[in-house]
Image (cartoon, rainbow, N blue to C red; front, side, top):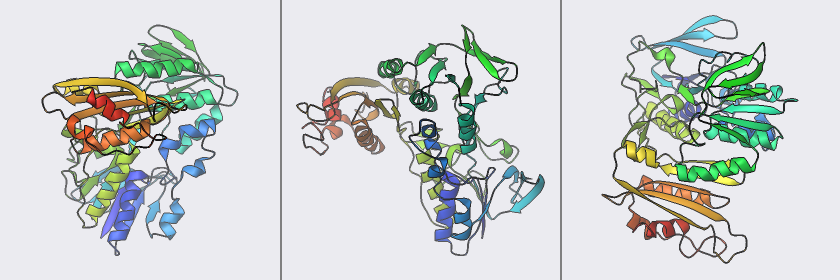
Amino acid sequence: MHYLIIGGDAAGMSAAMQIVRNDKKAQVTTLEMGNIYSYAQCGLPYIISGAVKSTEDLIARDVKTFREKYGIDARVYHEAASVDPEAQLVRGMNLRDNKAFEISYDKLLIATGGAPFLPSWPGRDLSGVHTLKTIPDLENIMDDLHGKKDVTIIGGGYIGLELAENLVEKGIHVRMIERNNRLAKMFDKDMGELIQAEAEKHGIEICYEEQVELIEGTERVEAVVTDKKRHTTDAVIAATGIRPNTEFLKDTGIHLFDNGAVRVNNYLESNVTNIYAAGDCATQYHRIKEKDDYVPLGTHANKQGRAAGVNMAGGVKAFQGIVGTAILRFFDLTLARTGLSEMEAAAMNFPYSTVTHEASHIAGYFENKKKLHMKIIYRTDTDMIIGGQVIGEAGADKRIDVLATALFHRMSITDFEDLDLSYAPPYNGVWDPLQQTIRRAK
C-alpha cells in the first residue's frame, strides 16, 4: 500500500507516524514544499524576544530522522499542483530543479496547512512587509529588525498579540492597527477591556477602527496609510489571519468549506474515495455549535493527523471534535477562552445568559494571590455551559482546561458546581473560582 501525504508538519507527520506504526508494509511518501519538517510554528514569535533561543529548538524531528529511522520517503521542495482522483495521481513541481513530478497513490492525505492572508494593499510587496507562518518567515523578520525602532502590526488577534509582546520585550515601539473597536475579538468586549489596559500599560500604540488603504514607500516600507491617518514605520507585520492551502484541489470534486477548507467527516475522510484531509486545510466539527467549523490550531492538527493516519492504515479512530479552546500569554496576563463568545452564541440563536466574577486564583488569605477575571456563558433553556473566558496573572490555564472538559461533556451549571476539584490553600480556595462564578448564575 502506497500512502502519499502532502504536507510535512503537524498533521501530515502525525499521520505518517501512525501509518508506519500500524502498517508494517506501508510505503509512505511525504511532500513538503519547503525543506523543514515537523516544527512548532506556535513558538516562532518567542524567538524574537529570546524566550526561545533558536529555531532549531522548535524542530521536533528533522527530515533525516524520518528517512533513516522510520523509512519514510520524505521529500523537500516538492510542491503539489494538482490531484487526479480518477487516476489517483498527484502532480507538481520540484522547486529545487524546476522539474515536474507525478506520483501515484493508494491513499492520499491532504495536510497542506494554511497560509497567511495578506490583503491586496498597494505596496504589500515592499521590502520590510512581512507575514509569519514558517521558520524562513521568522528568519526574514529577525534579519530585518536589526536597527529598527518602530514596527506596525496589522491585526489584533492571537498572532498579533504574541508578536506585540515579543517585539516590546526586544525594546521596539509597537503600533497595532485593528479594524475593529477592540483587540482580541475572540473575547467579549467586557473581557477585552482588560487586554487593552495591558497593552497600554506596556506602551503599545493602538489604532482602532482603521482600515489599511496602502503601504507607502519606494523600495522599502516607509509608512502605513489608513482611512484615518498616515503612520510612519520601519517595518510591517501583517497578522490578518490564514487561509487553507487548497487552491490546487480545484476541479477534483472534493467538497470544500466556504473558506476553501476540505470538508471531512469524523474519520477525516473527504467525499472522494481514498482522499483524507487534516489540520489547517481541513474543517473541524464544533461540539457546541454542532456543525463544521474552521479553527486552525496546532492541537487540532496533531489530533486530526493522528486519527487520519490510524484510519488510512486500516484502523478506526474518530476525531471527536473541538470546543474552541485557546490560550495565550500577553505580558503579565494569561488570556484564555473556550466554547462560544456572546457574539457566537447570538449568531447561533441560542438562548443564553452570562455571569461574571472576580476572585483569587488561590486562597484569599495568601499574600501572593492574584486576581482572576471570569465569565461564563450558558444556555437558559438547558442550563448547559456553552462558553467561558478567564483572564489573570495566574491560574487561568488550569481553569480554562477544567471548563473545556466540562464543555466537551456537555455539562450543566449544576453539574459543574458538583465537581470534586482539588483544594489546598496554596492552590485554590475551598470553592474553585469557576464554581464561585457558576453559583452566581443560579
